[in-house]
Image 1: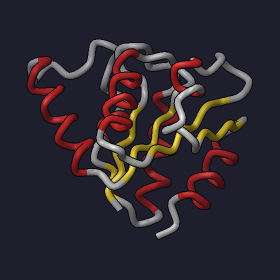
Image 2 (image 1 turned 120 degrees about the vertical axis):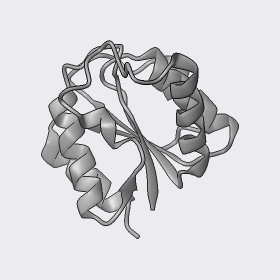
Image 3 (image 1 turned 60 degrees about the vertical axis):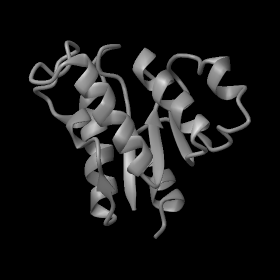
Image 4 (image 1 turned 90 degrees about the vertical axis):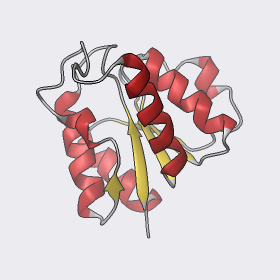
Length: 138
């Protein structure tokens, strides 16, 4: 399965290590993560410098359309992730949302949207791993 993993870049990189773990785990299940760079420790909140903003947007839209599912980690607020989720809704792409329940409140624009009916709250990586293992069965 091709997965578009959405998580904060410009909104903050505090969870980069967690993103890497989630990406590695999804790959260990045999899935292709199109946005593997999200977990790169060298990717700062300033984003990618080798591509223009338009090139990044166009590439990411292509990946969204190519993917089988969007997996979004929404704990760190991010305008980009919000845009990606709205686009996924627009093209009727399945979405799995992971949100740490002890952190920030999930936006009503996400939790109140009927398309996002697979919202999963978790406490730590082990819980997120169990959710992914159950939800991403081949």
